[in-house]
Length: 487
Image 1 (spheres, one colour):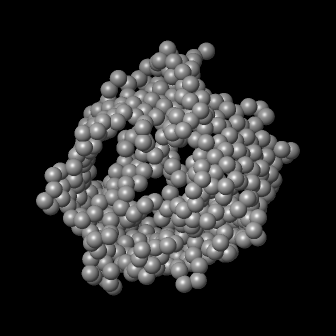
Image 2 (cartoon, one colour; image 1 turned 60 degrees about the vertical axis):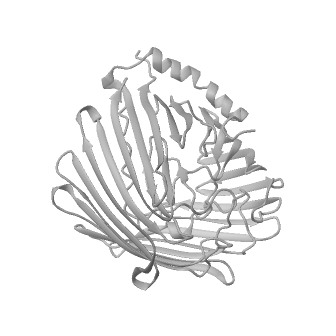
Image 3 (cartoon, rainbow, N blue to C red; image 1 turned 45 degrees about the vertical axis):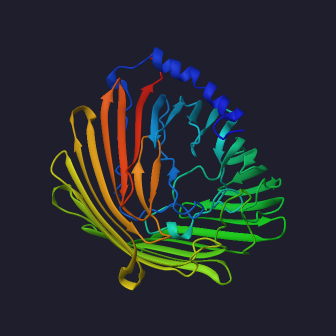
């Protein structure tokens, strides 16, 4: 069974016939159309871009943008992409009318492919399809946040293909302020079922699971119990599997003398694993802290983390970031970071030291925006003995009626075994493009209003020494329209 064409995905696809037809029959006037947001300028983001530790090294990584669709609207995103002579069509369709909502991504070989549908009634909410399940802090069910993701003011990445499965979920209110959740499905080839009861922001969940189809790392046998709580300034979870192995985590956020403080701590046994199969294990112990002092002209953020997978296998990370604004809406940012130890277990470079520095400026007159960025990583202090470097420049020009053209050019160089990642935003995903060796990458994006929607054309080519240019292109059309009827 393919990921994108499971029977649950087919149900979600069929559910599109009604809202999409409604949107066509009752096509609103241009003034009533929902504004289609332009592609975010993620190709020159402030902090260095990295995929999660569970993703393979040196491979492009894709994740969902995490945007939501307002009730009463339907959206169609149709397009095609090509690379090396291969052309692949893809579509993303979604709708929401308040009582029922759904989404379908359909493209062969797409890591984000799949569909889901959610129905809300007076008795509860039923969801079916390609779902992402997570309880509490993600210790027993889901994916726990990585320690190197959190800095002051930062958060973990949005949902991705990892951790999703074909499942059915029912959530219903119980009493006054309580909720009951039931879940059943297959995640990573493993049958999984669970029930969770929540009341006054405290939850108790019980999970049972079958054998995994494959075991890249050990998984918790049979089942697990999860107790979690959530408050306005903190949350925590204690999980224990059937073999008696346990893990606990708590996090808090608050003010400290006018500064914003975030902190997280985790403890437990190294043999504990989430019941959702994953390609890498999470650290068994960690301490993370982030501090953001008050400031108006210049803002500073400090983050630090210590973690350990098992005795003798751990790591540390510390980062200091600055950002400020200049005249005429320009802004700048800069940062320093040091990484030590392993981010995976096992890890090909368990004791590697990496020190990095980056700086970015963005500004420009009127509709013209310019951006410059320099990033350098070294295997010795003060970023010496360079292992990764990338210089990026971009220019964007806004035209009438939402038209836009943007050109980004990057020059990169990496040592053998290293990769640098460039963030490239599309209409339905954020791609971290993995590049290695030495070369240049140029990306041209054009957006034009077309047929009450937005047409986007993107072409990118990578040139390396002694090699032919590798060309990638994408064409897509995005339309968002109201499906509400007057009267």
